[in-house]
Amino acid sequence: MVTFAVLSFLLYATLDAWGKTLAAWKMSKVWIVGVFVWCFVDEVTKVFVPGRHFGLWDCVLNLVGCLIGMVVGAVIL
Image (cartoon, rainbow, N blue to C red; front, side, top):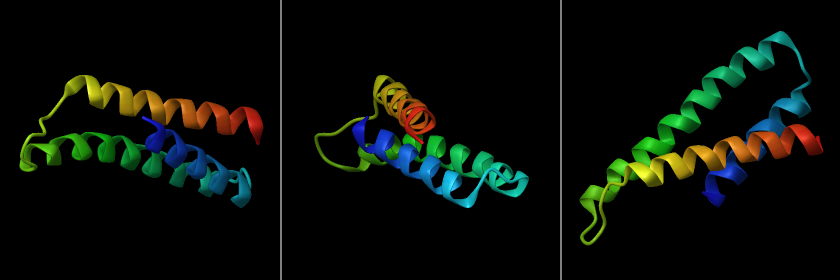
């Protein structure tokens, strides 16, 4: 969860540094979807590690971390 929060915060900081241009926010949609896909893929790959398993609850927590990172970025920056 913390890793994804930091990733999302850095994504928001990058977009803020680019400025709030239309192109930057169009690209942000692609990046945000990419972060959400990464949350899911991260859990799916655990199936291939002995002793680990896929957890839907972990996916939800990763997504919550992403949202927290974006909100913190919006508040701080």
